[in-house]
Image 1 (cartoon, rainbow, N blue to C red):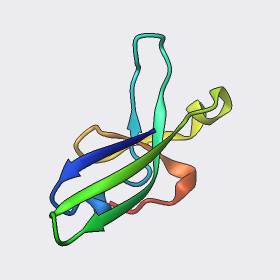
Image 2 (image 1 turned 90 degrees about the vertical axis):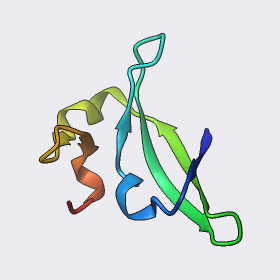
Image 3 (image 1 turned 180 degrees about the vertical axis):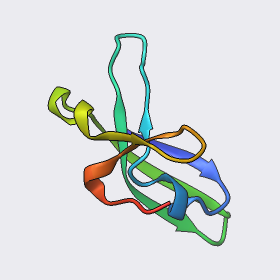
Image 4 (image 1 turned 45 degrees about the vertical axis):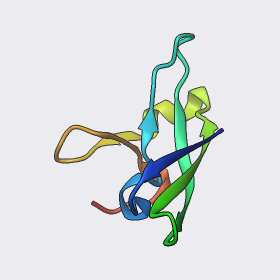
Length: 73
C-alpha cells in the first residue's frame, strides 16, 4: 500500500505504525520517496505481523513507532 503526503516527510514517517483499520490491523511505513518537483512524499506501507506488536514504542509525543526498524527521534 502507498500513500502520498504533502511536503518532505521522509525523516518523520519511516517506521511509523498506523492503525487500527476497520479490521483491527496495523501497517508500518517502510519507505518514503520525496519528489521535489511536486513537493510530495510517497510512502510505502506493509502489514504489521502479530509478533511485531511487542516492538512498538512511543515517541515523546505518544506516536507509535516500530522500534526494530531503528528510527531515531
